[in-house]
Length: 167
Image (cartoon, rainbow, N blue to C red):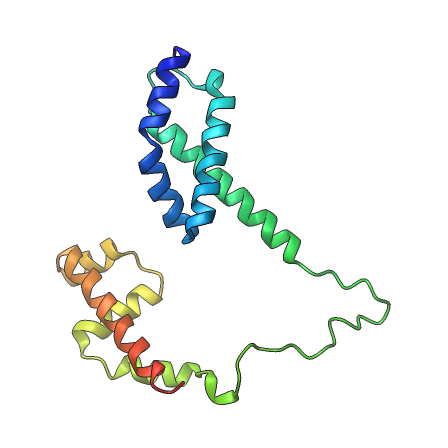
């Protein structure tokens, strides 16, 4: 692909890439950084692009891979390895980040709240929490996909509202 054509196609994807970057990072500054890293990497690897393949998919894959690699790097750097002889650091009490014991909710409280939902909300929400995909839930309940998504969203909102009152 000619360099000018490659660059123009890449520049044409910038707004789509920025939206995707924001979806991945949920932070405006991080999204712009990810967009810049992706653009540079795509330009550096222009010679590796194979003609007649999905250009947009190729660039979006670069962005996703950069995001995953950055995430892994952050997780690795945040990992603390206790090299003291008596494992002093591991034996320190850990702050949970919650102000009081009342700030956390037990599984029983959350389960009780979910069980109070009508079946039309409880069943799809429980299936979603159990790991079923929206499409699988819709098929099992013989309902449209949008209905399942809205019921799960509504159930999640109800839980957030209920437990926000306790804080």
